[in-house]
Length: 228
Image (cartoon, rainbow, N blue to C red; front, side, top):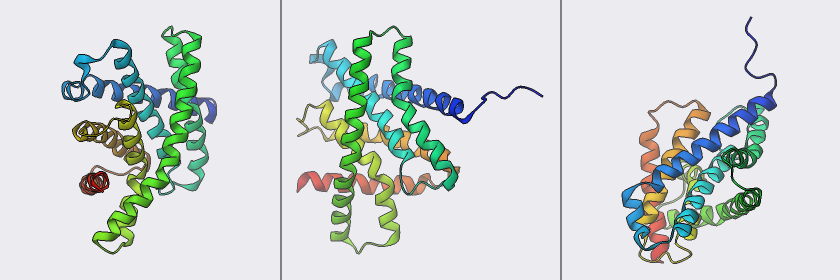
C-alpha cells in the first residue's frame, strides 16, 4: 500500500493551514488588483507604502475571517471535528508568516506581521458582539425576530465584523462617502466566506440563493446603521 500523505493529524493541520493562508492572500490580491477597488481607494494619489499597507489589511482580513469561521458556533460540522479545526485555526498565522519567510521577508517584518494578525483577530473577534447586537436591533424594528432571521444574523456576523473593520482601517477611519468601497470589500469577503464555509459543511451549491438573500439583508442593515 502507498504510504499515507500525512503521518499525523498535526501534519495535516499544518498543511491545511498553509494552503488556507495562501488562498486568503490570493483572494486579497484579486481585490487589490481590481480596477474599481483601486479607483475607489484613491490609489492614484497614494504612495507605494500606503498601497502596501492596504494590501496587508486585505490579507489580514481574509486570514482572520478563516479563523473566525472555524470557531463559529453555528458551523454545521460533527463535534469531533471541532478540535481539529481549532488546531488548524491556531496554525494559520504562523503558516502565513512562514510563507513570507520563504519569500525572503526580513525577520523584523515577520514579527510585525505576527503582531498585526494577532491584533486584528482580537479586534474583529471582539467586534462580533456589537455587530450581532446592532443587527438584531435593526431587524427587530422591522419585524419580529424568528429562528430563521436569527440564524441569518448569526451566520453573517463574522464577515460583517471583518468587513467593517477592514474598511475602517483601509480608510484610516475616514469612511464617510466611501460606501461603494465598503461594498466591494464586503462582497469579496462574503464570496470567500460562503464558498469556504459551505465546503467545510459539505453543503452543495443550491444554498447560495439563501446566502445571496442574507447578503442583501446584511447590506441593508449596514446602510441603515450608517444613516442612524
